[in-house]
Amino acid sequence: MWELLNLSFFRAAIVAAFLAGVCCSIIGVWIVLLKCSLIGVAIAHAAFAGALLGILLGKPPMPFAMGFSVLAAALLGPLSDRGNLDPDSSTGVIFSAALGLAFLFLGLIPDARSVALGFLWGNILLLNRADILLLGICTILVVVVTGTFFRPVQAVIFDRDLAKAVGIPATIFFYLLLFLSGAGVASCLKSVGGLLVYSLIINPAAAAYQITYSLKKMYLLAALFGIVSGWGGIATSVLLHLPTGATIVLMSCFVLVIANIFSPKKKHGRAKKIL
Image (tube, rainbow, N blue to C red; front, side):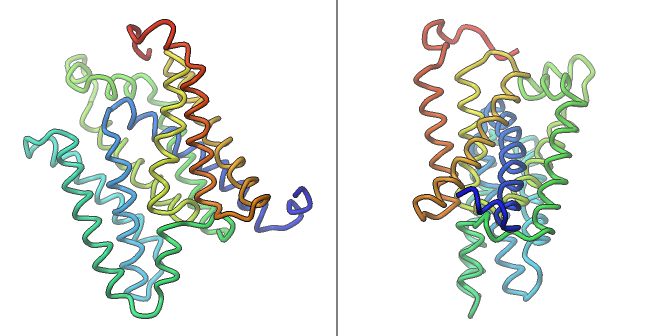
C-alpha cells in the first residue's frame, strides 16, 4: 500500500482526511455539547440539496452546497430564538425542507445522476486542489475561532443565558458556530458525502466525550479520533477494495465503541461536567 503514496491523488486523499478529521471533529464537539445532534444532519442535507441544484443548473455544485449549508445554519438560530421552538424542532424543520428539496432536484436532473449520487456518498480519492483548498480554509477558520475565542465559545455551548448575563455576546457567537458548522459540512461533502458526513462529525466528538472531562482535551482527542478514522478508513478501503466514505464512517464508529468500552466515566459516573 505504501507505493500508493507516490500517486498525487492518494496523497491528496491523505491530506483531505486529516483536514476533514480535524474540521468535522471540532464542529462535532460544539454539536455534542450543545445537545443538538440533528444540526449536523440538517446542514449535511442542505449542502447536498445545494450541490444538486448546482448540477441541475449546470453550474459548479460546491458554491451552491456552501450557500445552502450556510443558509440552513443561519436559519436555525432565528427559528429557535424567535419561533418559540426548541432546537430539535427547528432543526427538524430545516432537515425536512432540505431533504424535500434534495429529492426534488434529484428527480429533475436528467443525465447526471451519477455525479449527483457522488455527493451523496462522497469519494475522498477524487478530490481536486480546489476541494482541498476549500477544506483547508474551513479547517483553519474552525481551529482559529476555537482557539482565539475559547472561553466565550465554552460559555455559549454550555449555557447561552448565563453567557449573556456575564456580558458575552452569546447570540453572535452562537450564530458564528452555526455558520462555521455549515461551511465545514459543505467543505467535506465531496470527501465523505451528504449521508455520511454526519457520522464523522458526531462519532469522534462522542468518543472524546467518553474519555475526558476537560474541554481542551476533548477538542484534541476528537481531532485525533477524526484523523485516525480518516486514515484508517482509507487504509481499509484500499486493502479490502471497499467504498472509502463508508469505511471512514465505520472506522469512526469503531473508535467510538472502543472509547465507550474503556471510558473512565463508567467507573466514576457522570457527576462531573466538561470544563
